[in-house]
Image 1 (spheres, rainbow over the protein chains, first blue to last red):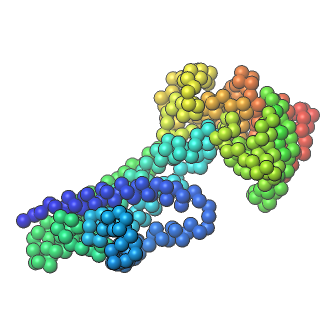
Image 2 (tube, rainbow over the protein chains, first blue to last red):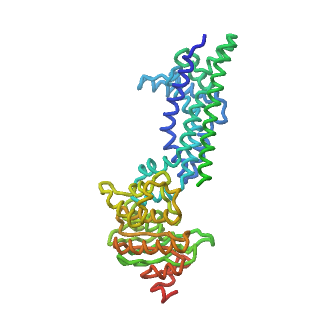
Image 3 (tube, rainbow over the protein chains, first blue to last red):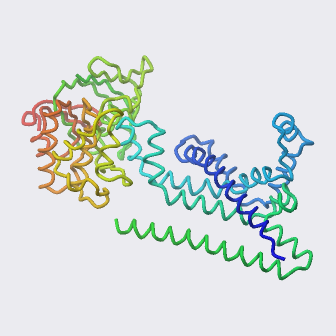
Length: 225
Length: 222
């Protein structure tokens, strides 16, 4: 029997993660794009780490950090009554780390693509940094924002290792669709695993096609200018 | 009155130059900075605008300190009542002509000023057009109008006409001269076009290698 619970959970996780990462990503990418300090390269490397690390490594350290047995996890539990291992909230925290580069890198190149003379023009018209960001910079990098959000969303839908390490496999709480597939294969329910997989495959393909289509349109528009 | 005493190390195409100038510009004067590229003209404009910090010196405008290295005083660009026009237009591509001008409007000011400026530059019929559909001359007229919306006392023009054809150049020179008189501006123009400098300037400052090597009426020094 096909259960849509894991799909709904995956979509919910991807939505919450994308929103959280957008709020973190805008100031972080802004800082990385415009800060001339050399030490920022370490932060850039840190942000890119999830691209190369096996998800299990990230998941393992997050599990250790968030576990109530250890300092940070027990502090969260004592002061905020918040347990982050084997819970949905924990999955969000893990996904934020895991999808960080997918949000930051497109945003960072978006910030760099806006000519700095526009920023200076806005300053010369008496506008603050905040208004300049909102009214001048962000509207002129909308393609980058859209790419960043869609890639983050799609990447979160597709995650497996980190979720399994930090969230386990609890139906209705942490059992997202990628883990359901693994579960069904283990139980030899190949037909159900195929259903889940096929939906995920088509969904991911459509999302990526949309991103490429949008970028293609943008490039075409720029050529027209 | 603008009193400039500027010292700044600049890295140009020909290596390092030490900019060192001390000048006074009278209120309502139109002064041109004339000289070869890489002499430091744009840097002088950027320092007055607060977009570049001098290493040493001071900028006094009507007795107010905008910059003073000894007092560690550096007024932010936003706090300087200037209008700035760049060579590369720098119109906001996401806004229409009208929105570009309205963006510059200080809080509480009425939009009458915008209507008036659009009328003067003759672009009323293009008010809802995005900048990418305008010609170079139209773009630069919008940029000049936008710089004037907040009623600055000083207008800084950094080679605003260098990429336009002769006819459009003449038209815009007339527009700028008219604005200069009408809004009682103190205008500083960067240019390396002799005819433009001759037509526009009350006084020319000849800039070479970061120094002012001559100043006066066009015919006297060029």
